[in-house]
Image (cartoon, rainbow, N blue to C red):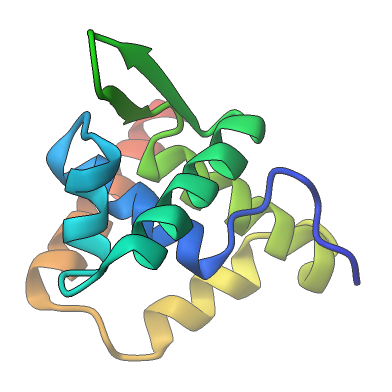
Length: 128
């Protein structure tokens, strides 16, 4: 199945993660984070990944003299929400219940995550 244009590849996701964690960065700073022992070819790779992410609307840059600073335009939560929605549409006829049930029953939740999940469910119940 062909990827939708706004989908993010694994390599692009590495760049987005660095931007989410560190904020606006230059290409050199991103290269140092994504490819710590990288050289010229890795710099070019990050530059190309940024171009693709910018074309998809996930990254923007601003020129403050030289070099440009790049920032994420899409938040982690927004990307997670979109991907889960797409997965639910593809696998579960649009229902999030099977996905959520699997994630919770997989047993990988920490006690803090279980408490947070309970708080969210309680809040949703009160709001309805």
